[in-house]
Amino acid sequence: MPETTTDQPTRQAGGTVVPVLAFAGIVVAVMQTLLVPVIKDLPQLLDTAPSNATWVLTSTLLSGAVATPIMGRLGDLYGKRRMLVLSLAVMVVGALVSAFTDQLLTMIVGRTLQGFAMGAIPLGIGLMRDMLPRERLGSAMALMSSSIGVGGGLALPAAALVAQHTDWHALFYGAAGLGALAILLTLLVVPESPMRAKGSFDAPGAIGLSAGLVLLLLPITKGSDWGWSSGTTLGLFAAAVVVLLLWGLYELRVQAPLVDLRTTARREVLLTNLASIMVGVSFYVVSLVLPQLLQLPAATGYGLGQSMVVAGLCVAPLGLTMMFTAPVYARLSARYGPKVTLITGLVVIAIGYGGGLGLMDAAWQTIITSVVLGAGIGLAYSSLPALIVGAVPASETGAANGLNTLMRSIGTSVSSAVIGMVLANTAHNVNGVAIPTMHGFRVSFMIATAAVAVGLVLAVFLPKAARPALHTQLRASSEEEAGLERAEEVLRGFRGRIVDAGGTPVARAKVTLIDRRGRQAGATLSAADGSYVLPVPGEGAYVLAARALGHGPLASSVTHSGAERAVDLDLALPGESVSA
Image 1 (cartoon, helix red, strand yellow):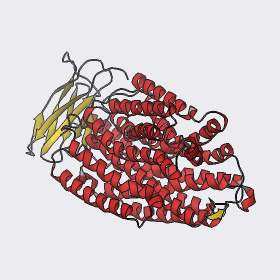
Image 2 (spheres, rainbow, N blue to C red):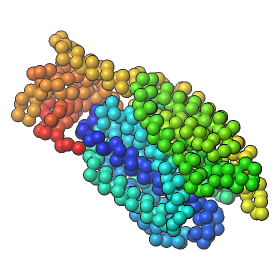
Image 3 (spheres, rainbow, N blue to C red):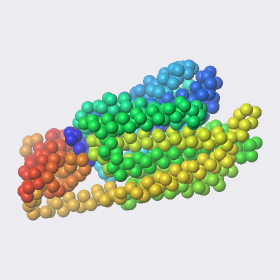
Image 4 (spheres, rainbow, N blue to C red):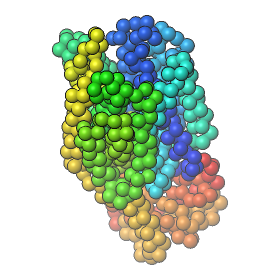
């Protein structure tokens, strides 16, 4: 059992924590989107063949996929802020390596290091769960989860402007500067979470998962170059299946696995992760199609003839709308729950792609498509961490959200491979250059719509939450107030007094009972004389946590036999808490 498993925050977070963590997520997204404006020029810039130049993008994808679940687990074990800073630091080093080279191999090394920053997203979500009160958690996680889209949308026009008017290496200098700023702000503003999972790091599991992911994603991203029926592609897919099966069998037998597959196999976690793949597919299709449509020459008869910068500005509302949906998500989720919010988001995405099929004739029409899709993707992305957090113990938040982020990455990888193949197979050859066709764009939108439909089916079968988070908070508050007036004796549970270090009673201390799965089993407030009573649902091991304004938090491992009697337990809170 973890040392501290309360679902309530164990430290009070300042008002700047959420913006700083969201900024770190946006920096990661900027790193991912950095080279999009110069993709077509990479072979000339690096003096290499087009098939080799694609490794600059593939290397980042592979390292990000490997790093995401591993950094999440390391954060659970050794500190989420520590691992967040480490992820960003590796990204900064990678950006500087890329900034000083024109050589392909060195560039691939730099981009591989930059991919490690992908672990920042689940680490940021885990820090928010550990520190924020429930009433702030929903919108905060929504903003963090959407930061990938926000950063990508904002980075496209900015990167295009830089690439068009300065040396392309300036892109990496800018990424390194943003990463360094994110590290500084994190160290100054974000406190370390005291929550830790017990156990050791599963190094064999990490190696096995890394090998399986590389073997799986490599043919997905390179299949169009190698040929989908080639021996290399099919051999790597077969090897991935074997390695991942062996890895899964090992993870089920080890005491402290990198990924708890039993938790992952729960209906709510499994369906959420599968739905995440579909959301990832739908997010990446619009990012691939609209910029190409906007930049194709008007002479094609369907291209919109816009510059690189204007194309980026037309797609930017995708990310901006995702950012503004975070507070909307918090209200919807508080009233209806994250499952309904996910379904709503997927329906809006479907409307966006369906309407987008008829909105491809002018730049302003692509802006409408970007806004609608941004709203839907923002709602869907915001719902995913809330569904995961509500389904796993607090000690597994980092690893579970890391796996969920990985599922989204797999979705974007599959989307990139499938849409790339569709556009290539439907392209016209003009003077030896493959030009995407309007038919290819429309087929891509229909594929995205089909992925959304699959996601909707998965979301419908998610188990309904017992109560939305904000409603739970309000109900819990009223129940705690009633607990102050309750005089009857608890027949089966815990009772005692909350005092300070000098033995003085502490009134209105929040006392929370957590079961062995890290879920809240009861809560109350201490009375004026410091007394409290808490019933238990049954026998077993629990954590009794107490916190009060002006005092540090305290968590104590306790056991109840299940007998019809109350266990006496006084809790002495430490002195003045450190302000975050």
